[in-house]
Image 1: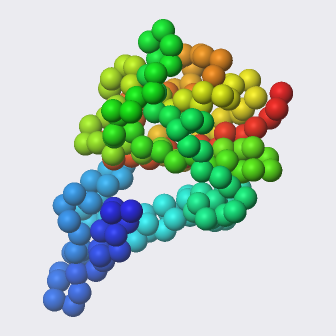
Image 2 (image 1 turned 30 degrees about the horizontal axis):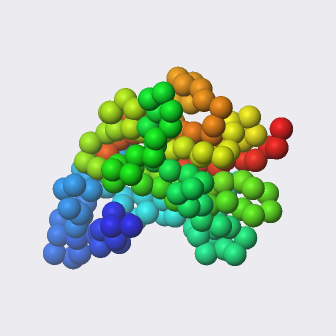
Length: 183
């Protein structure tokens, strides 16, 4: 949300600025896949983020509405947690950079998962990068990557539902729909 706030403060430099000059902190010129020195189009990027979070003009779920929708419940730490796996799952309460919110639709049991890396470096610690659902199983959920960082789900397999975030870039986000199949 801080980045979105900075984005809204960006824009044309005004009449006294040269054509093509933008009022934009240097940090934001690197916000995206490449450095765009002539037109960072921060407002366009903001609209893309909002479109992604709301599912607007797509078939994707509306994460923003789910936050306040009575049909969704926020899962607590008994149901989902930052974890590590050694020989058993352990709740990684010390991991303050790997933040998430998991919302379950009460009727369908689908889970919307929004995960962020709040640190200034990528997740490189081999064992500390899981979002783990202790009482849910891989066999009854289908994972759908919606946007942002995509987990490597092929490297490890455990019976319990989990997502592995090794390599997630600094200050990035990941959106998933965990669709309950019941199979």
